[in-house]
Length: 123
Image (cartoon, rainbow, N blue to C red; front, side, top):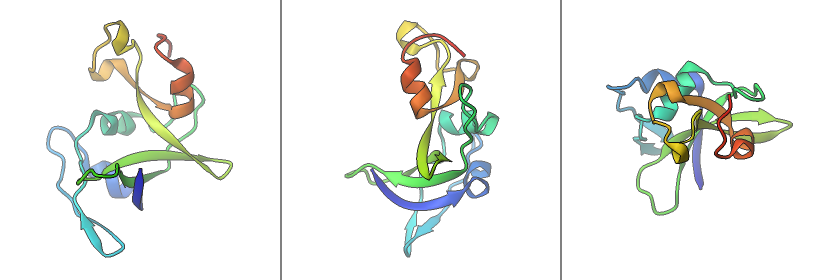
């Protein structure tokens, strides 16, 4: 994963409103980027930036992209003891067990809690 830049919550979330996100330019080291601004993750993060399990709060976005991908995306991160913790979109009732991608079945979880949860149903 390549990190291009760091942005505040206020510089990202207000421009992600579904169904009409704003096409917005973000400049990192003199290079202009037009990241993906439409994602269910953003809807989850607007509803709640803290992990439903441990309570850690997402505090900043990193503009990132996979090697070979031409368009970056934002990932929300919390910080704990100087380490960055990725915030994720979790399915309350797992997709592997028939859960939907609808907002009522989605919640915000940090990556460690989401990994520990696995495909179990719990809040």
